[in-house]
Image (cartoon, rainbow, N blue to C red; front, side):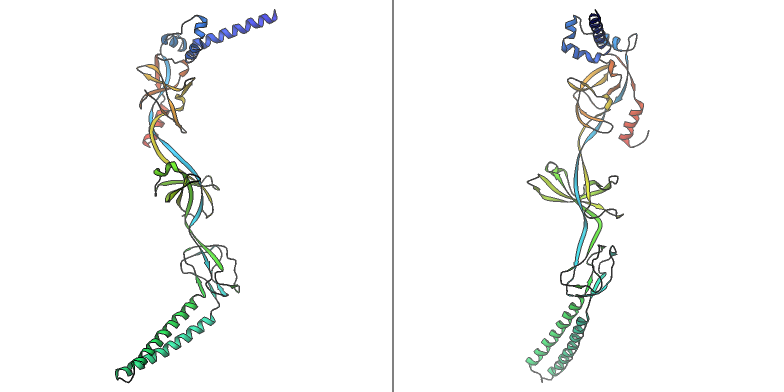
Length: 389
């Protein structure tokens, strides 16, 4: 007997639940019809007016709902890539001669201008050679002047005149060579920038091509990253990008595309792109990793509030209000944003009103009493105009 009572009680609960589902959840009636529940019970599905009376407010009448206007928004195609940063210019300064450092004129981490003296090498021998070359030049110049004076009187042969000119020219070249040799004992900065760590001291001996220091111009940071080949026709130099250093996730910087490679990599099917980010506050360093974001405006789609999207076994749909009645319209979701859903839909246009609250009591053709969601409507208007209403 106890088992029989439990079975009867279970059947009663199932019947009551089915009745509530049929009577008070009109949105489930298409599913019940497909499952053959109405045929099994020998009843006909309620008409829209009956559904409104069952699912609407007590005593019948139009179903109160909250609506919001459908808008339009361009679909954003976003690309995110990871790139490596490098300085705008970076020069490794090397010694052009062999010698001992007699003066180290800069310090590690210092900013230097172009032409600033970095170091001097021992140069006594070069100074002596320059002085000797200057003396020989003066002697050759005096001799050439004397020969030129004699040449006017015809006392000098053409050969002697030619010899004096060659001697003067050779002495001049010797002075230039001595001056050049002396200049090689002084190393200057080829660019303006920041000096790296110097691993040298006065008194150290260096050989030709030994590295003295690295100077980096990081006024701009260049970021090399790769993009998929499908957007090759969409990017252009000067296009704006958003850059976030991976080590500083809360920092978002504005930059632009400076160079686009001419060849797509066959292995990865990607294109190498170089972006440039100003480093006015000197927050960035060469070698840092960056997340680069590019946005491309896409097709214009219908924009609806997320609460307006409902789901059935056939997929997503919305309830639109037409002439005071609810109309179910199937939609295709294209993209979700933080505050809207971009959809494609036949039969739905911008400025249509869709239901966001009260959808539980709706069926096709049921009378509705719409009320506009003022807060969401004001926010949508603000987003569209950029002004606060």
